[in-house]
Image 1 (cartoon, one colour):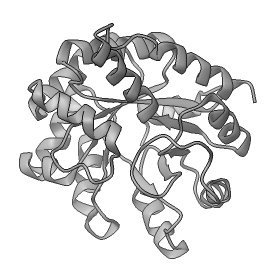
Image 2 (image 1 turned 120 degrees about the vertical axis):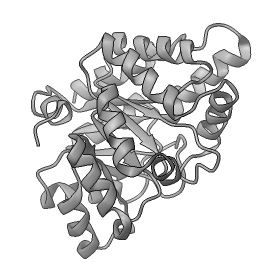
Image 3 (image 1 turned 30 degrees about the vertical axis):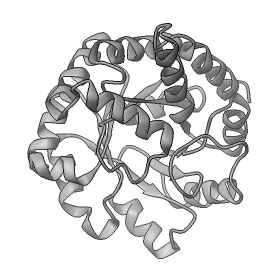
Length: 266
């Protein structure tokens, strides 16, 4: 399936920088402004996290951002409104990262139709295992949405092949076991896993979880990653600016530019 996501990877000059923000953190208006700043700084893809009351894949930084967003009134309708507003400003791919309860509550097919109508290009459902993924993947493809699936260090070769057969857009490589959050170094065996997955698929392979520095981006670029996902490092900066009331998006563009430079200067 041709999509904005596949086109972005096909036309890339270096690994893509996928930036992650929480929808509505700290408010709808600020969330839109932050997305605009990321785009201006050169973000290649934006992953927009729908805040959830029980975010089992997320560490404390994203959990706190989700609490701020929920307190500010973010909900699924507002998520789609936000994506619709961002889409007016850019043609880069926009992803949704969410949890199964949110999708099922709206209706699986309706969720993906509404996501497509708003301008989203891919959906990551963090807590749906392979055995339960078929209705989500089918609804995604019916709506023209890429179903983005995870592979981690605990994924067996047999299970990996089944995931690769269902996935679309790119493979989200879980680069560190546990929840999201910054890490000081690359997790052991992550580079080996990256190379194994790339040998088994033509889909782009994009590490996420724990990536927070330009040096980590450079090392993944040298190892052959097609992109990197940066979340907690950016979201922590947003939270720090909120607590100091200095303008919640300030400074995140500098980090994105540094990571873009690291990715392109292998």
